[in-house]
Length: 489
Ligand code: GLN
Image 1: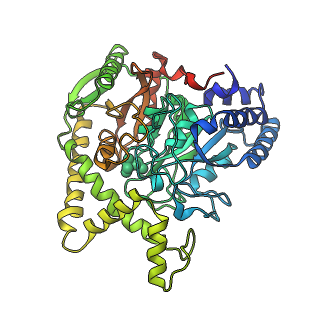
Image 2: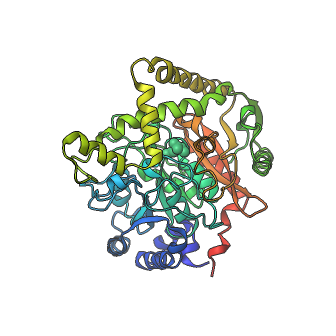
Image 3: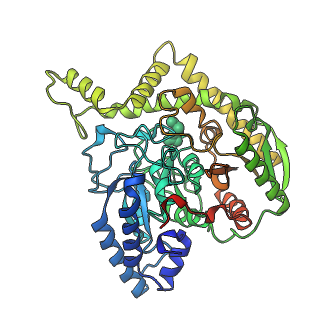
């Protein structure tokens, strides 16, 4: 195996044993990026020089045994939604085409403190609105398993970069599936932590009651190692929870014996791709053979989730995005004759179609006369969705579902049909509405060689269990070991 094909935990082990240096590892990844990036387009910004500097500093720490963590010297990538001090942070939008934040997001700062090496900022759907990475102002990302296919979104650049060996792990965010769906479509692992587990400070807001940052990696352990550094209370984010954080690796080997795994009947409905269903059913069988007890559960309000999400998320977005007006930072249109015209021109030219669609839907749903009918009603149904999960978790310890109803679809295939695009999130959205943790792990390939993903949903703050079950599944399967052939050689 060449260096760029290693998983994060393997790379970390080599670093700790001093069998490879961070400079060598970082150089190998930069070479890999040089070779494949023109085909994938996973990055918006590459920070080659600072990456090499950080690698040298990490080597020094490793040599001296000074503040060494499992991430010291490991090259990773950061979704362009996280503020990075002095480094361009666009959120995939033209409106932030020149924005260099004066501070680091908390998770970025924590990963740096741990000694990781930042390679750059990854491509994404504009303001994280999308499921295919096609709404990015900075061009589309290609799926490493089939360059004609989308990588998923909105953390499409992060997922593609991990899958193509252009980093060992990456940061993503998930408002309605944006970590899990691209992870599934790119054949890697991604976890959305419980709402409140990870600080949102410095993470550009899309829908504040749903957004959560998390890691993407090739193996479950990779995500556990990254999440360990990211979690924990942050006084700068009032929604981050001051709860003790377990050691995620401590019990990861515990297996699934006698755990009760719930299968919700509502997630195996018409419209699900037969190859996806087959792979997921087989995965459930595997969990059973490993000693889990499989039980049927019901989440009766599932069918409302997409509708509820597409009211709440745009409503919060319309408010969050009001700050981009060309005054304090970002793009400002020239030639306006007065302030109002400047606002109008800046926002008309600075935002893309999908973002404008959401701002309009959200503004409508929040406006007087419609608020009760749409926003308030959606919040009420959201509570019912949450209660469905509370009830299901009385009977089971975790829930398994497909991550995405289909494998990666063709570039351009759904771009002009928002409803079809929104349906891509059908299995991932409820988890955000209920604030629960969810992980996606590879569970097979379709006949065209495209990866498929299994989703595990847990009780609030039970990320540990998700890692444990996902890891057990990974140990008896080898989907995660496959690398996209298209880019080998
Ligand atoms: N695809 C969903 C949307 O377009 C989810 C995006 C996300 O999780 N950021 O809103």
